[in-house]
Amino acid sequence: MPITQTNRFGSAVQSVQRSVSTWLRILSLWFFGDYAYAVLPIGVLALVTFFLGERFDDFFLLPEWSFATIVLFGLSIRTIIRVKVHLQRVPKSSRLDSGIQIFVLTIVAAVLTLSLIILLQKGIIPRTAAPALQYVQLVLFLSASVTTLFAAEAESKPLIEEAKVPVEASDTWLVQRAMLHTRQACSLLALVGTAVDRVGHHAIEAEPSTDRSWLVHLADLRTRLGEAASLANDAVQRIAKLDKSGN
Image (cartoon, rainbow, N blue to C red; front, side, top):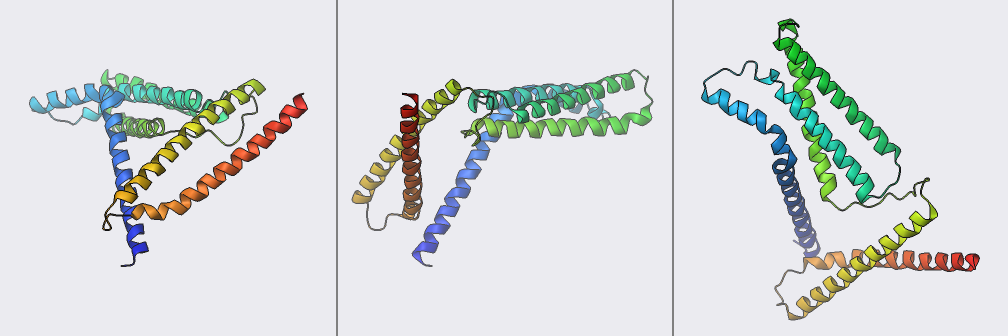
């Protein structure tokens, strides 16, 4: 097999390994975080039912499923607000508002389902409605579980601010955001320089048989750094023009 194909295969394997490792970490943070506390009562009831030898016929009609659904959707709302406001620093966002409204509707649906199940247990609603309520309750619970998983995934990775500038943002806010991103860019470029120096040091001391699959990424790194330098130079020229117009 040619060296280039071997390097590409090794890079693809490493990429898959990183993705699997990342998702395992996200699943661990998701399950052992707030999700475990939300579903803990259901797990306890399942264990009690099993050890008592009782049947699970009406287990999925327990109101604890709806309680957990309400908690999970509430956690999703909290995560969405934190991601958009505290991480992306977007002052106003129509997508944020619409997303929260959707979750509010799902919470309302979960509360209504909970109310109907309680009425079913009290005999006010006929038993013929049990299969439909059971189905709706489980669908809402699974939807809330998936939503919290993707919310944990979004919260765990570094977020890049949207390319478009919010219309509602003030000039002071924009300048402050520019300063913050500039400091972050300087820190990241410093890390790039350190990584390149370390790789160069390892390459000098390495044996001829050492894996050099990283060579395939050098051209892309050079291109990215060139783009960053071009964008930085363009920003400096714009600042100079703005400074002249201000004076």
